[in-house]
Image (cartoon, rainbow, N blue to C red; front, top):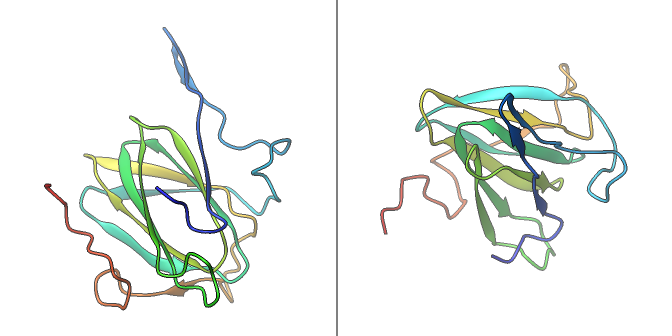
Length: 153
């Protein structure tokens, strides 16, 4: 898959032992790190879509730490060499991956596992409760050329 301009991903090294597992998500001494805003955790039930939205300033760093999700990105940025492109990432327990989403790229995710999937985000900006840097679309009724339905092909 050709990545949307500015999108970066890395496979996380999982270190399992008889006590459980450990994996680092993001370090300040690696090329993917730009700055720290906050860390938050969200969950999604199987079959539920959380999306679409984008940020004007914020860069997101998503990792699914339990369960599985389908993370989808759409580039609608005028002048972008990847305008109109879609990226899909299946990530979580069976594929530990960090995906960095640049500002102005639409994104959303769908829960794929029971009872829920748990996602950690390390955005570059703290959430501003009075004036959020968040611009939303309905997940199903919009101009984004993507169908969230399961593909059985």
